[in-house]
Image (tube, rainbow, N blue to C red):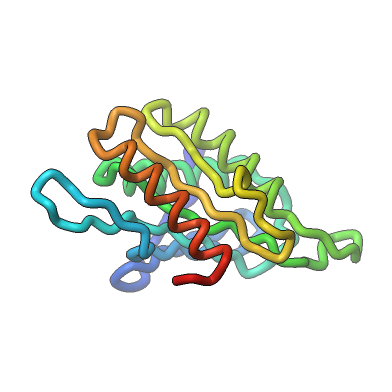
Length: 167
């Protein structure tokens, strides 16, 4: 039995997999714009993982979650922190009802991090009370990173600037 779906590289920073219903998921890895200074004084960019799905109404699929966890495990082992922007715009879902699903996505990612990433903690911009039109921002940080405090402080500064469009 499959442990997760096969992920194929489709470019320098783009990866793709398909679930059992042939729904395409794209994972793009890129610089986030969130930075911190390392011990040598160099600015390090926190990596961003962007997830795009070709439908808003994909059925729940445990292997999709395991595939995302497997991908993120490979990426995070080389970084102290990974940034994710969670889509929270209005969406037409299965029951032809328009909903914002950002909070449920945050809960899902929090469960994934708790289950598969024991050495990491997930932080979000929810404590800054973003308006309902904003996407939700999150960072997954290695708990024992020597840069933990810098990443956390810079993440919340980054969120504040992004929420109030000062960057």
